[in-house]
Length: 401
Ligand SMILES: Nc1nc2c(ncn2[C@@H]2O[C@H](COP(=O)(O)OP(=O)(O)OP(=O)(O)O)[C@@H](O)[C@H]2O)c(=O)[nH]1
Ligand SMILES: [Mg+2]
Image (cartoon, rainbow, N blue to C red; front, side, top):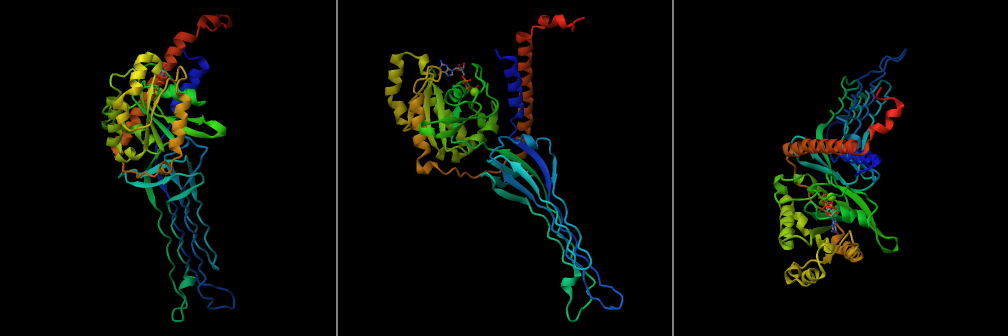
């Protein structure tokens, strides 16, 4: 059972993983140019001297490698840059509007909130992408003086602001993504090879949000592993936790498929997983794959030997590894295979095109996720109260009087 402190931590972790936000954004409009004719004592025809308007602020996204979720944007419903100031007399410029910089974790993809069309993505730390450009300031009438029109009585208005409701989704960037049915042992593996402490239990869908861990390899080298919630047959049609977490494996260089040795048909399970990925995005099948047969401590040596020699498994033409996270078997070999695959040149680029999203589906899934998390938190909390808090212990302080 969880300790009090870990219970609180779990609640915080589950509630804090936000990989979807919808925000209304608006850039600043350009300031109007000024129409002004210079007037001064003893200077009857001073001429035009209207200055230019300032430019409106832009809405800019900036990648930040220290952010892991979109939590900081959860309650921001509007993000607006400021307008440019108007130009003034004596050819004075209007003040430029202030840009609004939105810090986002690397791997954030932005879609139009109404049509679901892909707009842009931010991959690198410090990478800047202009989401909405501020309007240009209008020119003052000084610019329009000519020999035939020495006192132009017009100036340009500033360019209008741009506005858009956008959906930001985080697609976790990791080197290796774990793919498997619920209970395949994904979180257990992550907890063994990294310092991450994912929740582990023998009921399906223990993991509700993606977890990342840094796996240290030999000679101080390391790579990043992402544990995502289990996939089941029909996930691409919304079954189980549905599609909403499949996007987190889009950006992984290598996919580690995990099927327990105790499974009735390892190849069938692997093919179902593959099919679900294909339904979601066929480009996922171009990624390097490795098959790990897990929980080999749960079968006897004879069965294990049979599996290792299985022609059917070898026919899949995949790097095959047999592991037990609990007994620590095959873990070093697995790391070797992962490292080798990660360093192959063809696996270095993680370019993938982002298909448009169906806004209604994405919104429904997000509501569902918030619901799931609340139910999960409540269950954890109630269990904790029943099992751990012995109120009798505190009678001495008089709470019951
Ligand atoms: N015998 C044995 N049991 C294991 C091994 N790895 C994991 N398990 C058990 O399998 C159950 C499920 O493990 P998890 O790591 O939570 O599985 P998961 O794939 O993360 O499951 P979801 O989060 O529900 O998708 C737990 O009871 C683990 O103790 C293993 O190598 N050997
Ligand atoms: Mg898990």
